[in-house]
Image (cartoon, rainbow, N blue to C red; front, top):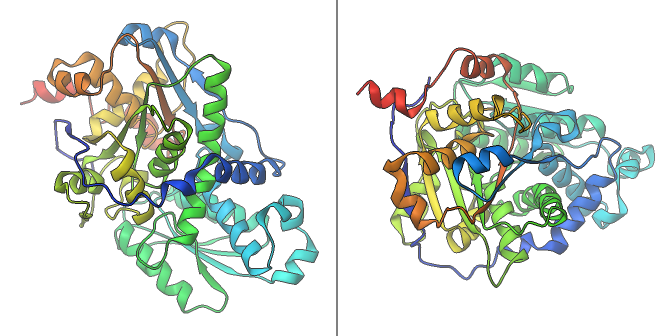
Length: 413
């Protein structure tokens, strides 16, 4: 199941810059619009920003924070922020309204349903995005069909099925499932593809999804300010790059003159952004094949075109992480130092923690640590993007030692 790569691979950003037209879409104004929409949901609560003071001291950092998205809308992951906002923006567009005119109570009303009718929303997912879209469609009385790639677990499928969605696991990889869902939407009356990645000719809805993710960035910014912190470093994970583009885009706008050092982390089995960064010319490199990794939510081999434009201009480094990095992060969160709170973080949520730990404790990565200027003055923000969305896998990692630490890997060499 897991990848066999044993070492981190990394590159600083030496990519040729573009006209940088997409970053304006991640402005404070746009993120606030999405946040105001989310606030209209009865399920809305600001998710915790957890400060890990003992761990920061142990690692040699000034401050270390994690935005814990396991509390989001009771769905154990952040993805619902994007799917719900994109559906709302689409319905607003189709009915000639601004999204501010259709908060939750209007969206779920009989009057709007009579005005808009019923759409058939299609999407592909490794789990969390599909569950979020299905949840939103179900709440709004809309149809939803979800396609999942091979290797997806029955637990993730069951969670989507509970939201009255049609859902299947296909003998295809993630990117092939995206193409399947897009084709089905195109061939269905009132069919719409709600996908958290973008390609040439399909960028409006993915931009809305990224703006929806901005709610977590906006919340984190306010929580940090309340604690007297201005982050010096942000580590953010990436599959297609939508979350990374949203977070990095937001903070690039928030601190235009002196942005934090911002690092993109990927699963090495699906490191399309790292490979693209290595090209240096701005071109995108796809990863094909099965992309086996415990980081199911990051097993995506084709970069979001909207996000890539933001990342090539504003990310400082790209890091390709073996599975042990994520597994270590999950265990560190789950077994905190005395005095720190516990964070339940799934495999796709914990890779940034595993990376920061490796940089601060493993001399092999001294060059990257120094290049990023990580030291006792650093105030670091991480996002745990999911909780234990696959409980069996979570126990395999935390109880049974699945994907042991890098020290164990090196001992086996």
